[in-house]
Amino acid sequence: MLVAKNIVKTFNKGTVNEKQALRGVSLTLNDGDFVTVIGGNGAGKSTFLNAIAGVWPVDEGTIVIDEKDITKLPEYKRAAFLGRVFQDPMNGTAATMGIEENLALALRRGTRRTLKTGINNKERALYEDMLARLGLGLQTRMTSKVGLLSGGQRQALTLLMATLKKPKLLLLDEHTAALDPKTARKVLDLTAEIVAEQNLTAMMVTHNMKDAIQMGNRLIMMHEGRIIYDVAGEEKKNLQVEDLLRKFEEASGEEFANDRMMLAK
Image (cartoon, rainbow, N blue to C red; front, side):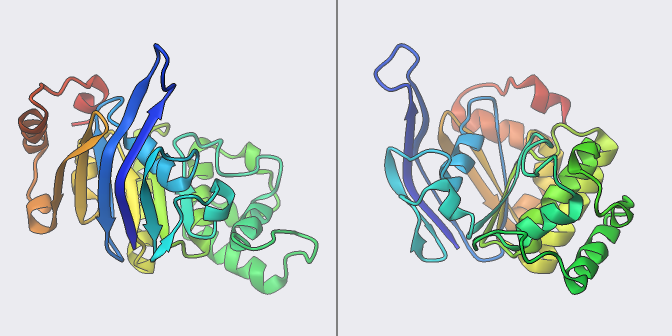
């Protein structure tokens, strides 16, 4: 479903601020893989997701989704292939538009999006059913402006929007990091449910080691722009946080010193 080969990205090349963010990263995801991505600050996790999403062009390498080379496609043209949920709940939705209008835009992803034809009753019923599953009461607030919602409500809505029209690949960039623990758990549970129901191929960047172990069928660890550990199946299921810390030290030759991730043990 995804084949990324030898991805290289350097920011501010040729200046004193030069930073090689990705150093020949290669990764292949099969259809239905749900991969969690962990690593310290500056490891290249979000940079890799942004490379796949087309936020900026890569310096070297190729990115193929569902056998289509998208390496040179601009970000807006990749929307037909990708669903994305961002760390900031303010991203991914149109704050001044209503809940049903945001969902209507998501349903039209990859096509010429317009609301001129309006939202018919059948479509509205679909949205109400989907929103009811969240247990947040949003199905009774279909015309409410999204900007009035809480962070957790917006993130749950963004997740629905990202998966309303089944994407080839779902990208989740620390999508619960800005939420309180209870709300984050609810969004994570919803994520697992949707990914399983739709058999989605997904990548989830997280700072929480427990979540990285519990979610998905595969885990990769990044360090200084490289993948240093890749584990799947039963071996992943049996992992403990201490195992990840040890693997990091073995692969990198350094002690793991990310306070944010250590607190999330």
